Amino acid sequence: MQLPTPTRRECTQQRELTMGIVGGKNVVCAGNRKTRVGAGASLLFMLTLIATLFASSAGAQEWSPPSTVWVEESGHTVDGIFLDDWRSYQEMYGSPLTEEIRQRHTLDDGKEREYITQYFTNVAIAYVPNNEREGWNVQALPLGVDALKNDQKKLEKINLNTTGSCRGLAKGTCQVFAATKHSVRMGFKEFWDLNDGERLLGDALTEEFVSLDNVTTQYFENAVLLWTKADGVSVRAIGEEATKRLKITTTKVAAPDGVPTYDEALFVEPEPETGVGSGDASSGPGPIQGGDKEIVVSISSQAMWAYEDGSLIISSLVSTGVGAVPETVTPIGYFSIWAKYESQTMEGTISDEYYKVEDVPDVMYFDYAGNALHGAYWHNNFGSPMSHGCINLPLDVAAFLFDWAPEGTAVTVIK
Image 1 (tube, helix red, strand yellow):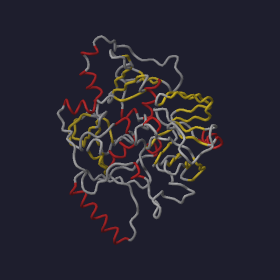
Image 2 (tube, one colour):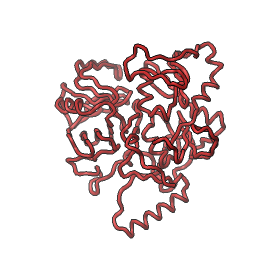
Image 3 (cartoon, one colour):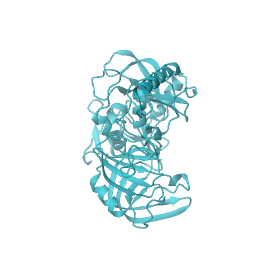
Image 4 (cartoon, helix red, strand yellow):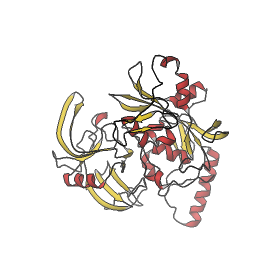
């Protein structure tokens, strides 16, 4: 079945999934195969055979990313348009818990139909062909509605009847949903925006509140968001809860023949001779996520390239995380710039050692674990790992990128 080509909005909108999670955001548009093949080994074998025969008769085979991968962590495959969306919003989704199954659901058209469905740790999704809403061929199931119903008893002591208001809040930091009269604010609003909230989270069903176990919580139609000072925003595992409640099998499957184990490097076009990237050394690997602007960082090369409309704008050596402990690893995956500060004091404790760096210039956060692109005035050893996980830039490069890259700019970190 032929699936729709991703829209420009899908290719540029970020949610990135970050919080230090490997993998990440954005539909891959350039060269990405959009044909859905399913996880069946026999069908995959036939398609592989046909592709091989075609390549043999047509000459050199062009590179294309895999259309199906097997996720070792959870022991399940992700395929086609589901794979594209999962890679775009891994923080939101979590790991795949089932293979694709067929279930009957009532979605936004109000009619019960059978859909191809897959459950992930935090959400469940359905393939909705020929959906009139642009970019809505993948839709989240209303598991948040079910979670709120199932949690009524433990929420009895909490007043959930208040309505929302954005009065006194800055524009863009709050939204009231007309259908439910509830609002989403501040950090939850940022997460909602970055994760295609209308489609994947849906409207707010409550205001945010502090639960009895002291976790700031908010229910949405399709998900439940949590916040603590220590962990920031996270997503409750209501997809996993649903599989247990509905007794849906989550038994792991072996990787099907010919299906690669998921690694984001699979989606970076190799250079014919060196295997480093799709262009020569001076142009770097080329843009990967498909947005108008993109910053690509290679950990192995300790280098950065910035692209606009497919053309290289600037490149530089950088310094990424030293990786001595987990907290000092620069995460690999698809991200986006979600906050910018002209100057900021950075401090914290890693392995019981306190650090404080004042007046760090041109700070651009690309995940919610505290990792950022920023200038570094305290060393000139670019080309070697030096940081606690951030991406250190020469001062002039950082200043240029800060002015050039608005919030929402794609950031891709590869091996």
